[in-house]
Length: 143
Image (cartoon, rainbow, N blue to C red; front, side, top):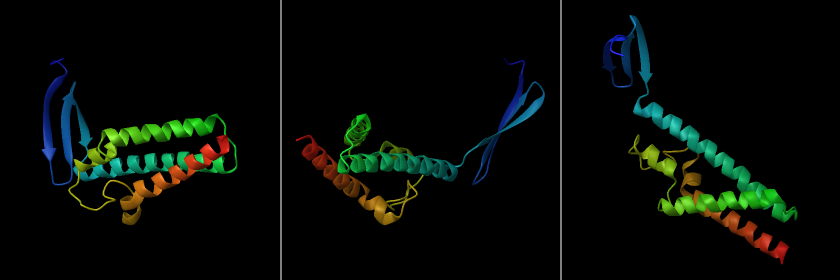
């Protein structure tokens, strides 16, 4: 392996970090993300997960309102319960928030997700209420 690597050097600046590796005489430049860029990727991931769970929760609510209790209702309920268990394990905090915390010291509620600050602040309260309404309707439908 040492035959292929002649040398490697890392270059740092305020925003970017590069690593230049000479591999078999060919310089390879590897771009390493800054903390700010990593935070953007984490926020994007967190927003996509949030959108996914919006689809899950609102399908669940829609299905119980129109009395379309099918396998998807139970799959949605299972995903919602799994999300709740994950939040309980992580002390009412999304694990993606813990990852984002490595890249930001912000005290804003939406530092880790692309949502308005008020929605990020009350997110758990709003969606827990919606899910509980859906569960009550489901129990009523099955009664």
